Amino acid sequence: FLNALEDCGAVKPETGWQPVHMIVEQAGKAVAACPLYIKGHSYGEYIFDWGWAEASERAGLPYYPKLLSAVPFTPATGNRFLLGGASDSDKAILREALWSGMKGLASSIKASSIHVLFGTEDEALQLSQSPERLHRVTHQFHWTRPDVNNFEEWLGLFRSKDRKKIRRERLKAASEVDTISVLSGESLTDAHINTLWSYYRNTCARKWGEAYLKRGFFDSLRTTLASMTRVFVAEKNDEIVATSLCFQRGKHLYGRYWGCNDLYDSLHFELCYHQPIEYCLQHGLTRFEAGAQGMHKVKRGLMPTEIHSLHWLAHPGLSEAVADSLTHEKVRIDAEIAILSERGPFRRG
Image (cartoon, rainbow, N blue to C red; front, side, top):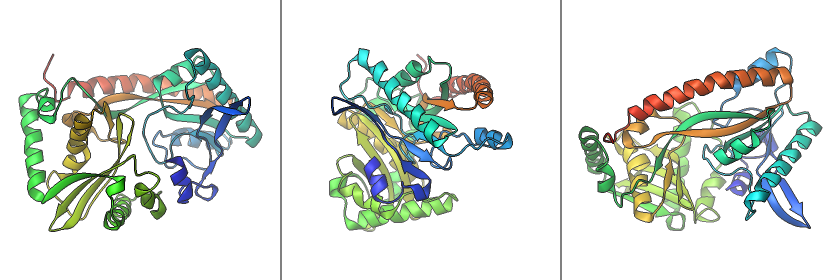
């Protein structure tokens, strides 16, 4: 996935993403790694630090370049410190080795900071034991598989009014189109790729966002990325009218891009939430992450979930100010999660 982003030209120094991936070797063999980029801006990250950058610049401290460990343009959680089959006792040592490499690089290029985004809670808790590394908690909306076998059993966990709402949504969506199907990367045709690329650009233009990805990335959906690509497709009159692009990794599914050629009642909810959840239930998947933001996801069973990131800022004064702001932010995030969880669709108890 990282290679596809570089190959298509979306990730390169000219776009503000210079790859400098970190490797730990032992006896000539790679034993640990992490994706790493020198950033000249804060676009395409989804854990926002614009306020920190503005404060830094106002104080006369250049905020860029900075170092970032993340999956570009992709707010998906996972290990950022890749340790292969390391034992539990070696994991801490290898993570510290990678962090030491990051610190050395940050010093040599005069980077203002290091940021590790959408990592695991285990990584964050271990590395934040050092007070210079700040642990930030935000939230997204994720689906975690309950003890059910199919979509009807899933809806059986909902309160009556919310269950009826989902059924109405699905019926409306089905009535708007002729067919809805899910395709793997190997099944995609030229028409599918052209449509996905067109819808991606249209969605970006409509939302005044930058189209980070290049056409070559979409071509890779049926080549190097085919095994993890899942596309939910709606067709009407033999035309592809809406698509939702997801990626499967192990037992996790990650929602990424949606697009359509017109307004269709409830079709967005069907292709972006109900169909992927049904796919997870049918194929034994345990987790579905539907992307950033969107409180409307709660009523469809995607619940607020803590997201973890790590941050190091070279300037002591800026680091202290950010640490203080994160303390207050954590209180607000905890309250938001509690409130949103109460608004979920599930039957009490």
